[in-house]
Image (cartoon, rainbow, N blue to C red; front, top):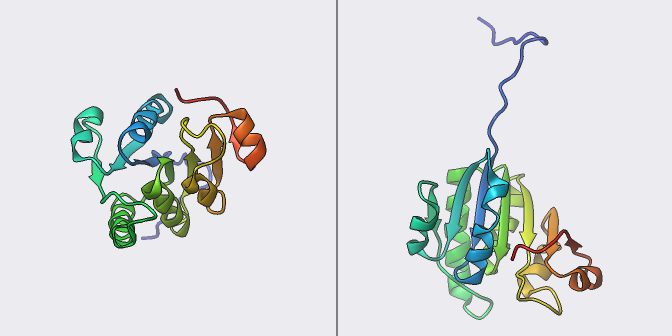
Length: 162
């Protein structure tokens, strides 16, 4: 038997798998404000705070170690944990509001062929964050929540999350 599908046979549309990544605190809060945009998608979350599971239940939540540019070994651990998460979820799209883990997820997602969006924190009123500047080299789309920052940095402005 062949697996031939006639051209006029309708194909089933696959549900997009979205991995939403954010560290804790304000980054997580801003990511949660994007939830209506994920309607109709198979959404998975990754964060540094295991307690965040209750805020998005029943969606799956994966936890990775928190890290920043000053904690090199933890950056390695975060990268490895995020790689495992990526392989488990196999997202079509990765969206992040930062910080370091979000940037790392964007880099890994690009290696896997996923589309990527990085939304810089609303707290960055004068310039993109370090993660945002790094994401500009890797992400399909980098958004600033401030029009002046977007204009100065080359990011796009499409409104604010908060």
